[in-house]
Length: 356
Ligand code: TXA
Ligand code: MG
Image 1 (tube, helix red, strand yellow):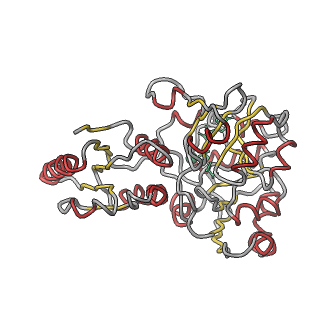
Image 2 (cartoon, rainbow, N blue to C red):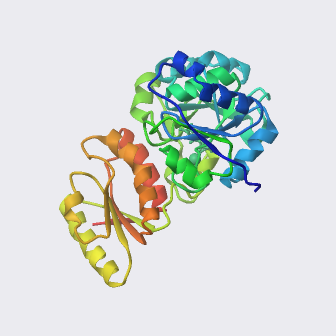
Image 3 (cartoon, protein in one colour):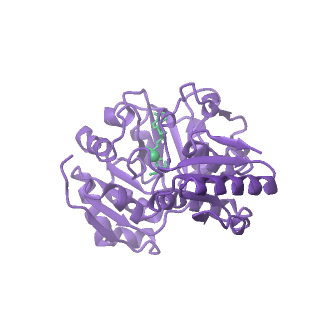
């Protein structure tokens, strides 16, 4: 693609939303979005790469910059819940309940659109995915721009989503116009995608809002049965692609903690003997067990699941920088935010799991 100059603008994300709306960087970035440019911005999940969702030409640049397959639809970001009605067929009561409890925040709703969003945003589907980010920089930008903004995660397709401005710069500089640096993103993994077109809401992608939280509010929530299957086609098209993947070969090692430690250390020894560079993805509680690995990363603390979510993608990226050949990772119990963490880790490991 044709190279462009990417500007890196720092914004003070500790300011209030009203204050942010007056910051010159936000005003200029919003103007650029309205004129068809590409702006990367922080959200409370990960950084997004945004374009005017009503402009086919603006949105086409996102797919080109990311190297993203065109059959993978984008999420539309809105600055306030009142704007939803403008872009969808109708606002069902389940959408209202979700918005009341979780928006703004890391929840994406899939519902029938009214044809006003560009076709390449929805990949020609009858539905559109919409969310209302709660990060103050994202909110200010969306409110000033006053347009729907299509924004996938701001990484090269297939790489871990960016949780820091530096990650976006590394993957995409020269391929978009402005990077709004608002510090680290919050949750660290993407939003939860919930399809509310059917009788019972269906979870298409686990993320920042947990299944338990959704069930507390909505009662019955189904989980896309294809989510756990390697073979069948998930209903969230993006879930079928290799994602979040480090360059090294990653293995999840599951079982009783001491057995996991023993097995991993034996594998490290053998790999190092063969001349491989070995990484271990672990937690504060266990990091001191793996002395022989070339690179040990504690991505958070087991007792603080949110910290693990926040640290995961940066850890995967660090293994790439260090040119690690093999990565052994500990597993987490499948509940709360750990369900979303494990979903991403299984993808990063392409399903490779060693049970001990
Ligand atoms: O947290 C997030 O959601 C981040 C930030 C930037 O907002 N965005 C993000 O976008 O993760 P992306 O493009 O990386 O993932 C969008 C997911 C994909 O799995 C896609 O297939 C799904 O949403 N999706 C989009 N439109 C859909 C639709 N109409 N029906 C079902 N799934 C849809
Ligand atoms: Mg993505």
